[in-house]
Image (tube, rainbow, N blue to C red; front, side, top):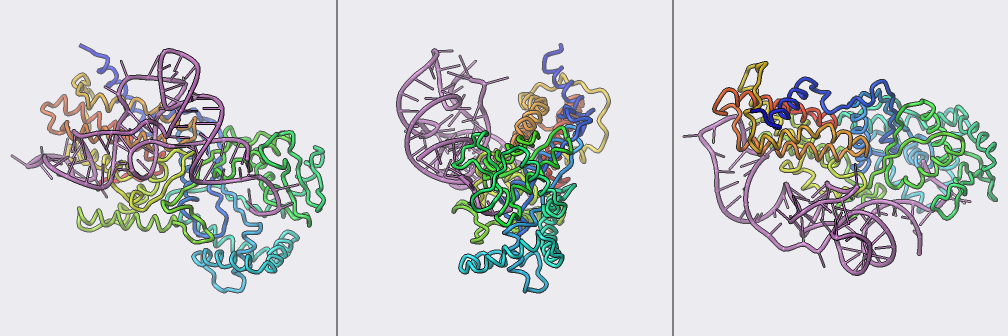
Length: 480
RNA sequence: ACGCCCGUAGCUCAGUAGGAUAGAGCACAAGUUUCCUAAACUUGGUGUCGCACGUUCGAAUCGUGUCGGGCGUACCA
């Protein structure tokens, strides 16, 4: 008396248990290369949660691509040149032993000073001019400051298990005169013009971009480079790496700007990377502004999350293991940001971001911990032959349908480059598991056939939760 | 002023290649544990799916307009 459900249970569960951490992957990237650039924070201060959204989306896309079998090269563009970093240097150069955590205040102070005293701006540009024209002393001062920043920023992200393969320094494009050669290329297109002030600008009228003036300014009047020129040079380098997939994660403030870059690339015959845009993180009381200092720093969010996790663990188990507290706290941090679709603003408020109940990272981990607990109590290997026809409860059917839809979910997430698809799926699956768990005992199922069939079912659930965790960068927790 | 994105329950969010009574979490109230972890589960809603008009047998989903929020519109990066 075989039914459609028997077949579904048998096929899906056996597939999952056989394919393990590959279940859900269609291996569409086997033998292919992908290049992803994300984060690329200005080296001026500790990242706030808004910047973290870039890193989290980017990292999840990297994980999705690797899951699909792509060989992924993760790039970080270090913006170690330009007015902002020169200002930071101006603010820091008379101070000794500057550390990463001094930089935010220095940055805020110097911004205030310069806006009060425009004379200081000349010093800023003087620093830049010397830098671009090979002043070794200035150059090493910049590099030293930038490295303090990058080290500080990436160590915070590394703590969240977000890692990079390649750091590309923007200044290298000037030192190697790549920007100079690029200007020659643009000259050949006939679209490079010198404006009345002596700056070199690219005429982009033919691309009909929605802007008032169709010009991309590439240099200052002293012919020092502006960011777009360096960015184009860099982007061309990435395109030349000839990856099958080339992605860049950018805030929505870069939408139009990136179209300008893409147009410039098109002019030279290059295919531009695929941009993934996301909306900003807002505070309940308004916008975040680094210069005003009303930001939520990522590291503060992480610390609070660990503190909350430790507190919850102590409530239940006496003392808290720091690794477990980190896994739970960081899972909450990541999930709070990844659950929202890219094109919506994330409204950050401490209370819901640190909620460990319901639709949250810890909820997912808790489901996994419960499954682990059942297997610890069972203490044996599952038998080879399992009769799946005994599974016919509605809660079991809900679960198997959810499990069966995981591969399609991965495809959607990859097609739309939207991590929230995975986050929401993971919640939906664990919610169904929680309901199943409430109404169906596994170890006391009544008979051996039902018991092992349910064990196989939740083993499959466990595997798919683990696969979601791998994609979201959330650490599994054995017990909690 | 113009361009792009968003607007769904008190709050935070899913759901839009058109399809049946629009779903979660939080908050609030009441319950569930001699039984695999209660960070869980169940029950309780008064949603004009911002508003208006339109296309359609049928619209949260498509079109136009409008209001509100986010972002942008060469010489920051």
